[in-house]
Length: 410
Image 1 (cartoon, one colour):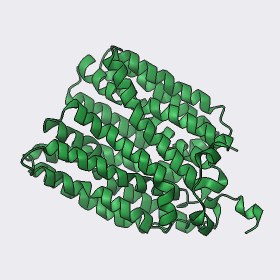
Image 2: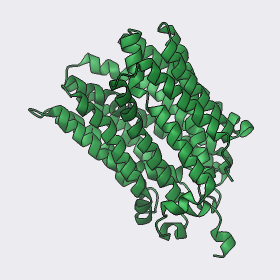
Image 3: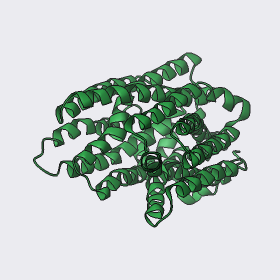
Image 4: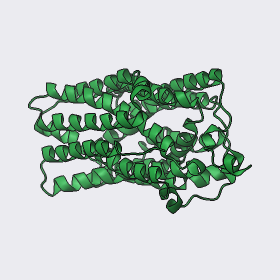
């Protein structure tokens, strides 16, 4: 291989046919829909379960922050995993199966005579370590599953299907949980969700992305210093850290503002979430056209501004119906952010160190998930009003968007 060839991105070795790209996109849409019940249970109902089992605030904080920390560590080790197991689908199958086994552990641990909440938290946090490897592998291979000019469409379709699935399965699984006593309800819900996620797992295995370049798999570990020497890569990591910290930091405050300040009932909060996910699903259909017309940078900046507006409305809303507007804007802006964030990562990555940059990028995102809520919660515990915390997050989100407009991706 000559010097010119070596300088080309490893994501553009041999183009997929249009037919293969469409096939991969369809399989991705089916897979994410089938995985949605798993996501609903782990992210929404497991925290509710451990709360009802008597978990302390410290234990609940460990569930969220400990999981994010495990994801951060695994993301940093992701390039080493890909060098050791470069072939798809084996590199995704091992960690993904281990991660989805969490739905077998949760109902089993409910039969312990004591320390059920503690046991569930330990298992969930521990298995997030292998989840980090599957997340890294999928992120590294996603751009290889379709044609370069269809990447935004692929990512957007996945988020659209996720929005549809979250809106539907949140309600269905809640009805099952309410219909049966514990632990029978969680046995049924976990068994159903695990079965669907395993079908989705076998669907994902049918995806045929471009293989890794043989030299990329043999390439020595990328040093952070080398990644930061590429100006677009360095600048985008800083913007990613600010944007994702601002996105994740106010998570606990949203619930506090709606429940304690606006006196929202479970039904009221459910309406907010429903509007959010429906908006995400609908606007996900249009994001690819917007990125083609305006580019990833401008749409990313608009997404950050929209997410800032969402927080501003929640902070100043005089009544609950106003929160539906915030949910609508937040859903639309969220899918815009997710689609363009991935596109910008691909654009800003050093061409010869793509896999290493994916590891750095995912580690930064997961670190933001870890540190953002901790910092914001500490500020509120120290006396900062909840509304003020939401406004700080609004300014930080908008600021990340403004900084992104100065990003040079080439």
